[in-house]
Image (tube, rainbow, N blue to C red; front, side):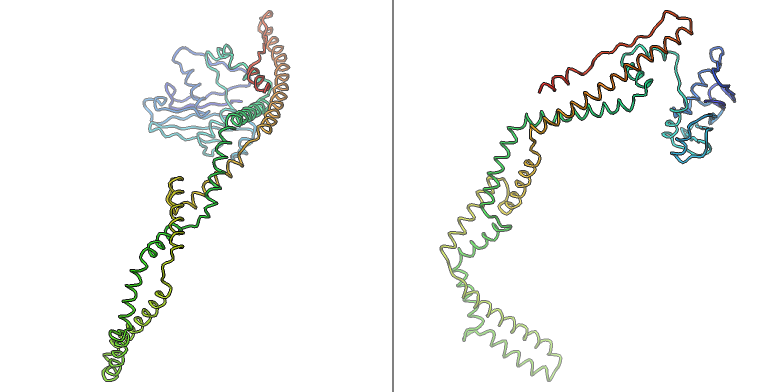
Length: 406
């Protein structure tokens, strides 16, 4: 309950303090006296938007402060604010656009102020009663009167669940043929690639092997010449390096400055000896195998054909197989059983129907109570023949009925 209101430097008001008594308080005055300013001040305390044109022309800021009694302390406790059943709300705003608010001396955000204000003040404008002429507001008013917001939210949730179940069921029916066709194609593609026994990097390795097999004779000639140059009687480079190593070793004993040079020749001799050994081993293994060459050519042709078919590089075929396997697995996991979805749809429909029936019954009882109370109020106002009648019409039942037929 609002007990005290203080307004400073706002519109036509320099300073104003109002003490309000319990019950009905009436503020009267001629046009321009400031009645609407008081209403705007209350709106600011409820989180309304402040603007510079609300401030008096000779001031840089304005303030509004109000004392409320018999306030439920739950909101204060929830936000960690001090106070019991009394709440002092204060708001200050300036021409620069800055606005600050406090509740019982503690600063609060605009969101918190609006939340608190919604529970403290209800502002009804001059033509507020015209909202009663809008049918779209009638159900909200009845549910608020009867306290059915929670049950209505339950109904909305159940209805949304039914709609989702209906969409899933329809999608399963509509896409059954497409999904089946895609699944069959994936089964074939996965089987084809698995049958190829793909190995990562195989195409590159086979290309290198084919190049080697194509030039076996040339490799034998070049490597043979190199091996002969290293170890033949005429041009035995290894023996020559051995003699040089011995000579420089003896010279280094006389002049240590030659030690590093002798070491280099020794290393070269060791490397050339190792190279000659490796060449002999290579030549021993090097031979042309026509069967292996044909197998490599066939394998490369297969990999190239699969790469063209699946739109990727030949070395990427194993990755492509994994992609297709994942897609097939996902389709199999998400493949919906129409019968199971139909049962889910039936369960959600039954739940909607039960909740809707209970909500409708509660609304009809509340409507009778509301009509009785309004009639009593109207009679107290001297309108003995006036009455309120609540009429119910079904809405949305056609959609549910059509779905239930399936």
